[in-house]
Image (cartoon, rainbow, N blue to C red):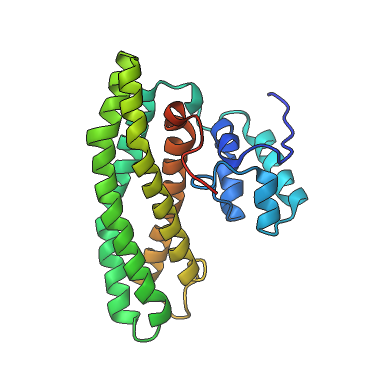
Length: 240
């Protein structure tokens, strides 16, 4: 196995692109590697008041334990067609399955527990409904507009197709940023998905599924912003 020592000078997005296992370390420390992927890790550590030795130590330990490819795929070297297939069949299909369920769950816990936990459950419901509505539209734009252009360019790499694909990205990048912001708000209003005493099974399941949604979205947006979109923009798909 190749030896590696991360220093923190690497950008967060590039680091996860090279070593997907880093995502687990970043999630533990609430480091945004999708919409904050163009920031140097040292900058993030400083801004969030984290202990640099701890984060880098865990990162290097994860590399040593897992090896260079925890899933056998270096997506940076994969053709765009394979990346798009991964996005649609793994992440988009997941969202189409989970978003309606979570819409029901967030509505139910607001209805049942809202009188006692209005400060958290009312904004959670609003943020999730906005998230669901925007993601459903966003996926259609990607699958019907952007991805066909990228696939056409992969088959016939002309400047015209390249610029057509590039022109679609700005709007979609902004939507990624907003989705990331909504995820952060949902986590904040729930105190990091901390359950109140006596939370029922539906309450527990809702928070578990929301955390799973957050994890999947981080990997989903990372795959697009820091790998696929980077081929057409020359920079990470998000901003500081």
